[in-house]
Image (cartoon, rainbow, N blue to C red; front, side, top):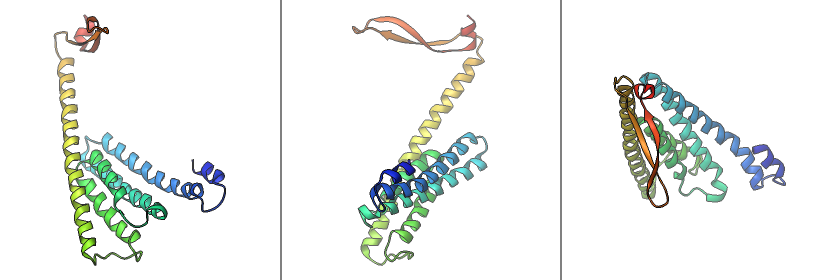
Length: 204
């Protein structure tokens, strides 16, 4: 995508030229975060290894979010510098629980202070507005992490319940099946669709 944008942009420093040089960097960090998250999910039976990959994904998301915001500086200026971090925090909590997004938020804040605050390369909170911005950022991240952690826990409980149900039915000596009714436009049941059947039921 970057090369066609660069070719069709019509000249240097146009929007297409600019985006073509940003998209590869952002896409690389997004791919790294995705792959690390997938490794973490595959290693859920090895908690230590899963945590390691979840933290790698969290760090990659933080860097990606700050880079994306940095590339938007010509259009948005240096206001709302944390805007892209909130999405990264939400993705991190969904992939790895509440600890990785804390890393995303912390690392993202530090990188934002380094690259999105004038003078570039300095970290300082010199004004009341800076302090209030930090407080609002921290509170927003806390809300996102808390809600995301609860949703992730609910999803895991459902998955565990489904897995236990499936194992118990696969070991059952009685046939068991779940049917879903198919209705016509008037609401009358005209057929049934088998949604689940255990091995014993399938044998019958």
